[in-house]
Length: 232
Image 1 (cartoon, rainbow, N blue to C red):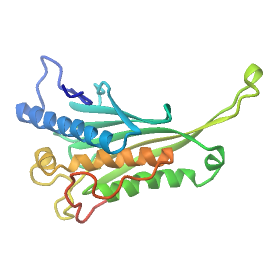
Image 2: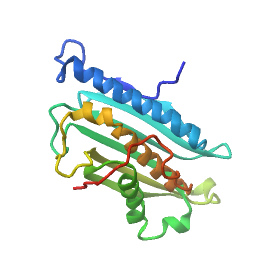
Image 3: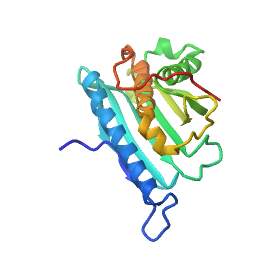
Image 4: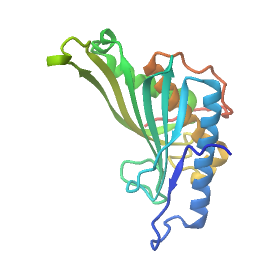
């Protein structure tokens, strides 16, 4: 039996389903597509491992979450989480009914962490991956943080540890600039085109970049050509 990497949160019992049965079914297909893409990425990039994690329960009527870790020589050097949110009515700050939340944590060489531009560099890892792997995205928002851990007392002799943290969110959009943030077909159209897979790949590619691993080769996924891209 295939491992399930995404859990779906639906409206609680007794509450109206904001999108109806069709919304539940389509979002279930979207979660299944993400799970399938995780399987493909795990085969292409053995350093990446995925695991099932609970979806948040309060951010949107529908949610799916997946966690990933990068391991080299049996040591975990980076980890992250991707959450897909769906609210048929949309929410303030979203461009359409979908929102993706991403988190990445990775160990950094202290010399690299000392670079004053590391925040801009880290953010560019994500935006370049989104530009290259997805049809489009809108309303990006996020932070990059450097965390330095120093030892004192009995731990005084331990070397300082530096970590990189990226927290970001964005809305998937269509490739056609004239289509607007929610093209005809809404979530169903996005699922039919396989657009969400590119966002998962972009997140994994950013995770690998933060880990010091080379990017995935172009064309390794079953993504359709991204065409023209739109970013707001």
